[in-house]
Length: 243
Image (cartoon, rainbow, N blue to C red):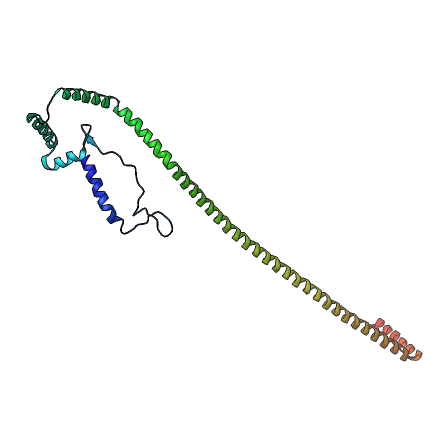
């Protein structure tokens, strides 16, 4: 017990020097500084021997007197107190001894069960106290997951908008090419029409010229010339027949 008090006093004396560097438990972003100001942890009782003597006392003697040192010191101290009648064994001594035996028996008999029950109660109280913090952390983690999912969906929307823009550009390109094809076809139709018109006019001119030439030639031939030509042709045919 004295060792624990000494350790606590040393910790209290060193605490102000440790707080000189940092006096705030949070940083600039409002997040707790876990390094300089760790969260308090529920302390556990230290180990004891013989039911009430701290383990630190035995370790202190062990480095100087060995394993039997603490027991020798205890037995020698009790012998000294009794031999010098510093501690007088009066009638109350035996009453206290009887009470000690009963307490020791009750401790060894019911102590583990009571300790287990008390540990469960302490754990339950600690769980109840931490439940709010755990639920808050869980809700914050769910909020972070929801925010990440929303960011992912927003990125998907950006991709969708980009795809729609590309689709619109493709539609505009298709409409532009369709209009170019329509323009080409219309111009080709007009050019073909002009070509057919020019060819038709040429055919009409040639036919008219041929008809005019034939008509004029026929007018220029007299009946005598026609008769002479006809006789000449008959004669040529007869000559060709004899051959």
